[in-house]
Amino acid sequence: MTANNLGYRAQSTTSGDEAVRILDESVAGDIDLLLTDVNMPLMSGIELAFRTQAAHPNVRLLFMSAYTDIQIPTELGAGFVAKGFTIAELSLEVEQALNRGPRPVPDPPQLPPAAA
Image 1 (cartoon, rainbow, N blue to C red):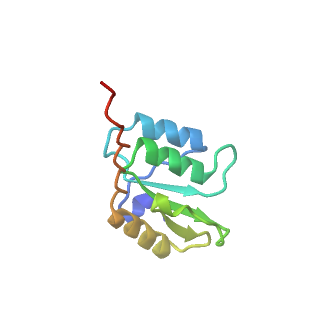
Image 2: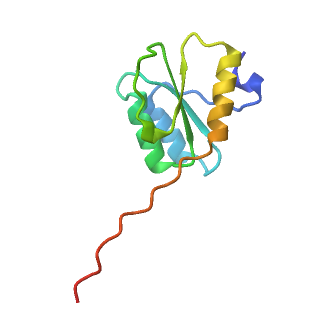
């Protein structure tokens, strides 16, 4: 069973850098969710998530890992599913992540008025 069988269009990558490239080349709204492992070579899933949120704040985040004691930074507003999950469990987590909606984009910092 794949994400396509669940009614989702999915794209897999082999690295965090490739995921960043695909996100950067995508049209706004084409990608709704990033599902990533926490532990990956070269770029961790957490680093990938922070980079995604900075450039694509409307993309929702869902982490997976075999390590259930992983601390996911709360500011990411991400979901988590433990590896060994069933398709039903993954489907539920994906649905919940999509229903959370995008994380609000913080207001830019206010600069003091320029001196006259």
